[in-house]
Figure 1 (cartoon, rainbow, N blue to C red):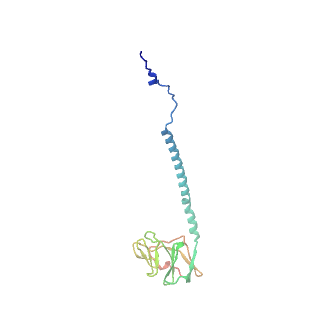
Figure 2: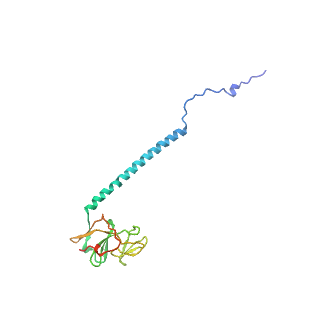
Figure 3: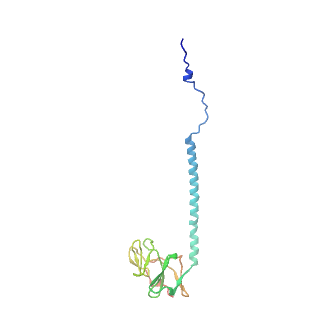
Amino acid sequence: MSKKISHSKINPPPEKEEHAPKITTDTSRRSFFRKIWGWVALAAGIELAGLSIPFIGSGRKKQTKEKSGNFTAIAQVWDIPEGSVLPYRSGRLYICHLKDGGFLAVSIKCTHLGCSVEWDEKKKEFLCPCHHSMFSLNGEVINPPATRALNIYPLKIEEGVIKVNLENPIQRKHYNKSQETYA
């Protein structure tokens, strides 16, 4: 008696495969990332436009302000003794009362690299802490690396009040007596 071994149990016959379209994980992942990058690019474009519009429009506002000549009252003439300096930090300048009685509104920015200069009362000089430039009371360069005098702001004196136009700094190469304003 011999037993017949059925091969159907060991190796079942191949079943019919359905030919439905397969969606691979690569395709769906790729399309997902394309959508994400599209949204990121759109957000970046909106951000860039939001930052660009105020920058482009800022030139017109500045021109109208310059024409108006807004002067801000800083101090009284008698508040600043001759040969001394009054810091006006919110305006980023110093009011200098020169020994001959004239006044200058000197910028706080060093003309070398824009660091804030400090007034040394003992030496009667402006000192730049970054690269050690030194300036006299009238803003003239005493010690390089700065190559030109500190910028000044337009200043006028009305009824004993010192007023400065904070919008229009004036670049200058050297100090000139004609830059002073007298009470």
